[in-house]
Picture (cartoon, rainbow, N blue to C red):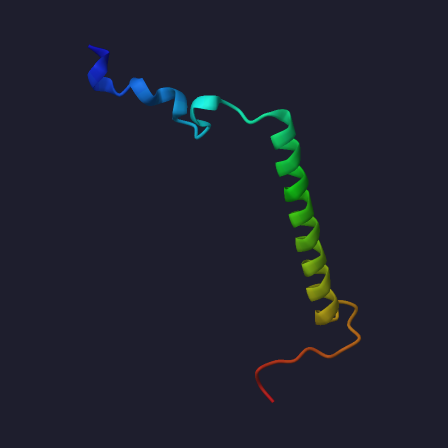
Length: 65
């Protein structure tokens, strides 16, 4: 009776597959890579802020002359 309701493949529904959750080492590796990615993004944002002259040292450029 339950065969027609799609209950069979429910364990793999959340994308973890048949093996379940990744191991602790895999989680640490992924989180460290993500942290490095975020640190690089932060540097990129800081560079843009500096180029825009947040301190007001350079006049803003507009499309009209």
